[in-house]
Length: 489
Image (cartoon, rainbow, N blue to C red; front, side):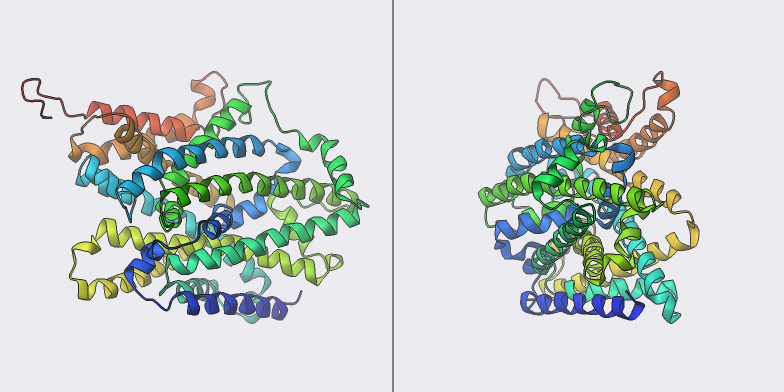
């Protein structure tokens, strides 16, 4: 595809999103922006959440990792399913009972103001870094394929990227995103299916049964790793880690939960969560099958691209055809923007509700403050992405930074676990110190795990370690109960 063709494709894509925004954003109220008036159809929320869960990083990396890690990622996905059950039947009932807009308001009611602010700041840092990283990768691809050809600087590319997201979210907010995410998820899945069909034809696989036979007999389709507990892919480690990743990065994440809180009631939100969790398993299997076929096609045709370069390299080959290449680009853009647009809206929501406490402002200025905050968050994302480009020339370094952002979920896990499963009261003013120390200690444990644990390699379960350290640290600052009065002191 030529740069002009790619540019026209991107413009057409955003025209569709802006049209959706026009029809869904007519009610420019805070209730519509933050909660979609609690009227979102659960099935649309469930389908759209697939795109929000699978970023552009996942779209590229999961297929690219099959050659070295086989289908081991599926063990984590199985853990995801049980994590979603915990969200559906433990966390959602709490959120709906308290009628929350921001889920971190729970921490204020349970522990106090500092705990509340600590949880909100942990989310804001993690989401800003995570959303910026995802958009950075996509902006670099667009810069290489399109904007370099027209002499447009990377900073302008980023500003255009964020401006387009702002344009279709600034009015409707989460109400618009529920519908745009549905469309973007559809594009992403079509992209994967179209590529699989092309690869199957190229590999002389003419039916679903032949594809199944090819996949099941390949050594790359190995799913369960049960032999070596020290292996980062060991089944129990991967399964448990997947479960806790879901609980924290979905159930304790304002971005993901804000969509669930738009459903009419708890029952519909639970139907959304369970149906989404089942669909997600099959979607990930689809990505893994794609990765296996991509690897076999590369080996057959002498293509040397590996890992994250594998899918883009093959998808943009001339022999692939303009249709497959177009759907690849649409899928990549959809995967990236379906997570980025909801991140922009959830960051605006959390900043308005949790940091500046919008509900305490005069009614007549609340909408104006929300709109200014939306612009502010957009500028922050632009700034962070441009800084990434200036500071980190090696993408592998920035990937480490992105992983480090996940450490901010450990304090959230510890805080919510203590609040839900115990009656402990805390010395609220010290909570931020525990939330700062636990991720730092976790990072060093992860970095030196081989030396400290006799060769044991920590994988995704570092999140559990982080949450446990936070939990134990919070126990140390608990308030004692006066036995004579029953009050906490």
